Image (cartoon, rainbow, N blue to C red; front, side, top):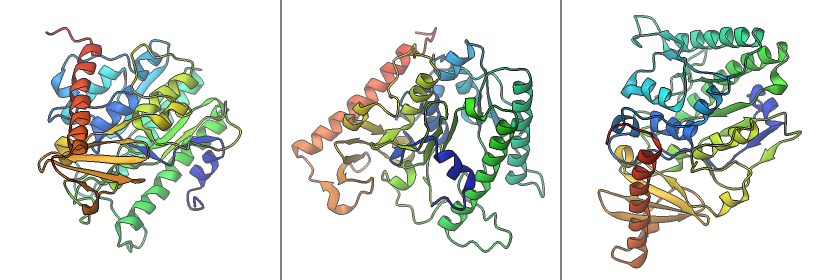
Length: 357
């Protein structure tokens, strides 16, 4: 029911909707690495950005940039956490306008105010680009939706995490509505792709004390995805299979006619082979577990306890889903995850075009 989210309700009418969409990692910069590159992140303690300081990837922003698109990330604060700006430059982003360079809130200052300032920056950038008849690939990374979720209601009466989260959806729906109105006023809405998603879900007890630690969970990985594509859709297209953040860049690349120059690990949302794919979920350095989905079943290995779980239908692991230790299935799951973690380290190093040994 999107009756309280009128912008998303409108965009849904001519969009790809992925009800089973998942992030690759419950941590912002690793999730967004996958979102823009179509590559899984590292499952190790250090991210690829930290491992490979000279990393350079032929990711979607890069491929669009060399074709004349202006690329940038608009943020309320400077993108400096864990060398994030270096990572985004390695992916092909060129511009990083922000409201507050030091990222420190002064007395009485709120992240909500900074997000609103970032929205104005984005509106100004779009106006300028449209007036100059340029093409763009811009990302808006507001921070108000990052846990812990504040109460943004007028009376401050929202008590539960779900209530506060819904109010934040409504707020960001209004912000998205301002951008849609601008594009429509400028005559560009029908020529613009719009992606609405989340980097990840709740992943710490600070976000929700009820979170079960040490396991993968849909609460952390299952996120919304809407891709407004009016140039190819006249109605809502619901994607019937499980999808991942690694599938977003191939989807946009195909819609924009930009073939990948780097072997992507995802596929466009409409690729029927996704129904038969093994899709991975990493979270070792943050949740202590990695896992995958195959054939309608979610599988997880909790590394510290060396426990393997299998759950049908949904990423929600309970004690009854525990696989007996020292069984063939237990060792098979260990093997699949270890192979993928090792492959990923080799894969990204090969395509990162580093100039160190």
